[in-house]
Every structure is written in C-alpha cells, then in structure tokens.
Image (cartoon, rainbow, N blue to C red):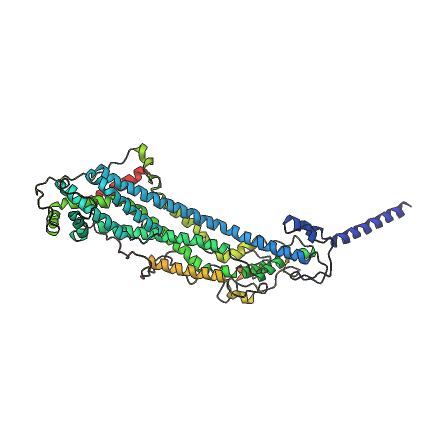
Length: 572
C-alpha cells in the first residue's frame, strides 16, 4: 500500500512540474520585468501570455510572441534614446577635454599677456620715469592688439601694432631721454599741431632710431602669436564640431535595426541573450556610417592640434616671446641713446626742430640691471602664476588628445563592447539564437555599407557631410596659415580602423565568429614629417616673416636675456 502511495505522489509531482514548466514557457512575465526595468513604456502594453496572431512590423515571427505593435513603438523610442545617449556619453570625455584645455590655454595666454604688460610698464616706472605716464596708453594699446590677434578677433596686424608702438615711443625717447633738454620746451602731446612729434612718428622707420630691435621683436611676436592664434582657432573648431555631431540623427533604417538587435529576442522571452559581435558591428557601422566618414579629416585635425601645441610651447614659444618684449624695448632705447649724436643730426635734417638744443647736453645711460620685486609681492603681479605652465599644458593635452585620433573609426566597436556576448556559447543574430554569426561583416564608411546585410544606408547624412567638408577645409587653411603642421609619416598607409578601401574588414573587425573579441586600432602618435606648404593664409592680415636670424647677440641682449630668464625662475 505504501509503494502505491509513493508512486502516486511521484506521478502527481511530475505532472505539476510539467504544468508549471509549460505555464512558464507560455508566460511574458520576464518580458514585462525587462520592460519595466529599462523604462521602455507602460506595462499595460505587455501581454500576460504570448500570442500567435500579432501583426508586427519589425520583430516578425511565425511562432508565439510577447510583443505587440504598441510595444514595438516603445522599443523604437527606447533604442533611439539609449543609443543617442550612449554616443553622447562616449563623446563627453572628448568634448570635456577640448573645452577644458581651451579655457586653460586661453587663461594662460591672457595671463602671460597681462604679466608681460606689467613687466614692460615697470621698466618705464622704475628706469625711464620721464616718459612713463605718456607711454602707458601706448603700452595698453599694444597689448590690446596682441590679445585680439591671439584670440582671432578683429582685423589686427602684429607688425602694425609693434610699429605703431615704436612710432609713438620715438618722440618721447628723442625729446626726454636722448635730448632731455627739449622736454621743457616742446610738448609731446597727441595734438595734430605738434609738428615735431608728428614728424618723428611718420619718419621713425626711415630714421631707424632703435636699430634692429623693433623688427626682431615683431618677427618673434608674429611667429609665436600666429601659432597661438592658429591653436586657439583649432580648439574652437573642435568644440563646435563635437557639438554638431552630438545632434546628428539616426535614420529610420538604423532604428529598425537597433530594435531587432536589442528587443526582438524579448518577443520570444529571451531577455538576457546578447547580440553576436559581427551582427552588432554591422548594425552599428550601418547606423554610424556618416560619422565614420569624419575619421580621416578628424585624424588629421588631431595631428594639427598636436603640432600647434608643440609650436606654442616649444618651437615658437609664446611665453618666451612675450617675456622678451621688455628686453627688446629696453635694448631699443639703449640703442637710441648710444647713437644719440647721429640720431639728433638726422632728426635736424629731416624734421628741423632740434637745432636749438645744445649739442653738449649730458645724456645719462640707465643701467640695464633689473631688480625683481620682493618675493612676498610676486603673487600681486598679474599673470606671474602662469609662467612655465605652457610646457605642462602641452604635455598633458598631447598625451590625452592622441588617444582620440581614431575616435570616429572605433565608435561602433566601442558601442558594441557592452552589447556583445563575447564569452557566451550562443548569441542573438537578429532572427534566432545561434552559435556564431555567419553574415559578412562590413567595414566603416558609407561606401562599405552597400554590402551591409543588417542596415540599409541610402547615403551620407547631409549635415555630417557638411561637417566633413568644413573640417577638411579648416585643416587645409590651418596648414596654409602655419606651413608644416599636421603632416605625419606613413599617412596614406594608416587608415586607423582596420578597413581597406573595398569595404571588407579584417579579422580584427569582427569577421570571425561572434565569440571572438574585438581588437581596436592602435592609437600611437606618429612623428612629424618634414613636408612644408608655402601658400599664405588668405584671411590673415599678417605677412609671413622669416624666423629671427641666428646672428650673435650683443652684450646688452645677452644681459637682458639672462636677467629675463632669472626673473622667470624667480617668479616660479
């Protein structure tokens, strides 16, 4: 009797387990849970049990399905929202990198300008006190023009700004320093009636009272500020480009493919299975085909940024050029003093107003020694805290931006990293659960998508096509404005995405089975090549000047440079 009862109990339990298993297989409970957790839409659209007569437009299936047309609509909105957010999240770090360093570099540039202006003002306040009040407005005007040029605002010429400053300095030096006896008899105001002052200003470049120093100062500033201006414009262009790409829209075909990849498996109750690697790459490369077209001009743009950063902090050192302004002007005044008799004779011939000044006028030559401010006051000097920071910013920025050379090429792989079942035995192919994806995996770019089995790409996005053209044009103009930047060795051999021109891909692009892991392209920095373009930038008011010659420095120049470097180290 006990054996019969035991057998009966076992039979009942087995039947109940079968019933429960069948009931679970025909339940949409897990689908509803995923629908709620992922915040896809109202739960009322999810049925309790799968149906067989559902009219679906994307997730078509002949068997029972837990999806409805309303759920598909919610799935479309969800994949559009999530994919767009994922793209923005991956680009956020790049946008932040560019924007933060734009602010850091601009703040440093302006602080260096402020410090250099204060440095020059102190020269006249401490040594050439007789011209201090009169020259101050011209100092302000000079550095205002330099600031505008550096920012790329206004039609400003560095050479004209420097020449204008020395034009206005000449009357003051001639009447108050070289011939101090004239200061009491002839006013050096800005009035048009001041014939001597006007004559000296107009003939300054012909008389050449300051020797080679104005030209040397102009050439150094032109070289350094051109690099700084180009770098500022390049950073601004990068920020704007990233803002535009963030607003790029996904096509209807892309959204349909994303729904198939992410949610059609849910319709069959498979909420945990992941997409095959090759399948995901096809979908993402199809969706981001137009963005991938930005890879080549973007990679060259990053090379331009790296080279310009190096020029600003190294080859055409902006910091050193600004710090040397005081030295150039001090040497220019000293040159005028040393050649006082010849200068006065020349002015007498040209302007004819200083013959009444005694030729025996005693001229004092101020010492070129510069005494730095006390240590406890260095923090009060505007910009002193920025000295030496350009080199640090250069290293930091180049180190970070080099990692984003292939940003647009590897974006599909980056987005797929969190979606693929790399270590799983099975994966979702868009139609069924498989061991591996058998479809052909295409490469990046619009042309390669002609053979994409998952996404139909009709053509390049017009908005992104304009962005590509704009970036290519910007790269070309910068290279014309600053010859030699942006060229890299083996440029034509490096696509940066593992994709050949035919649109096929190699093993690293996911052409193997879905269990294979992805290998992203190498992001190592290339060396700067020696190619040079010699076409002038058509929008620039500046004529490209040759670098300062390597002629030996005068003793005054040598002393001034040593003192300037000492000041720099002192403030650090």
